[in-house]
Image 1 (cartoon, helix red, strand yellow):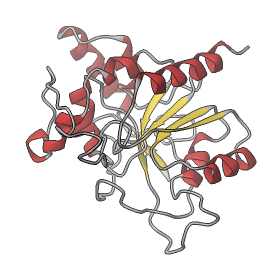
Image 2 (cartoon, helix red, strand yellow):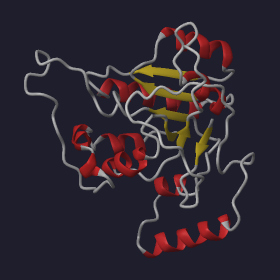
Image 3 (spheres, rainbow, N blue to C red):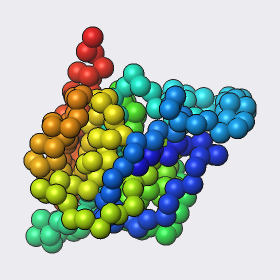
Length: 246
């Protein structure tokens, strides 16, 4: 398993299905842009060209600068974010939502929005809230690169790193541990991380406590509701506690 960086010359990601596409397997962490990742030829020159271009168009800002090169800032906790459930709620009954889910408009035009009508169910106000959190935000979803093509622009976020899931190994999950759990712990490599998903269980928390030496917050979101104020409060509190720690 690796983390696909967000430069234009990033390594190609494998094409996978969207919601709930099972992918399980042994994984080796790979973070594009860090010291242990191989830099591509001309990377520094291309990055400088991109910076000059952004300044010329008035796009230089802290958040974009944080993610432009695909480098994962080791000073900040990682926040692994799923799409289906946390951002895109589903599963509520007609009794729970007689009028169906609310829909939103965004001032941003995501690529591929016409092919995904459910994008309007994602509240674009979540984007600034995630941008304000002291973390490195990472897509941890079966949407793969589609999350950058469609969801990130809708939220007003820059292109983010994407977890490249390992190929399925054909084995059933052991002891109820989610198929993403091993890969995310491998990628975190001891660093503090939060994981936001609608399928996290106590089995995952138990496994992470036993195999991850650093702090971790496995935060389950009710897929029927999606992210709420209480979820953002919990994430903000935990992440700031991590960054304020000596």
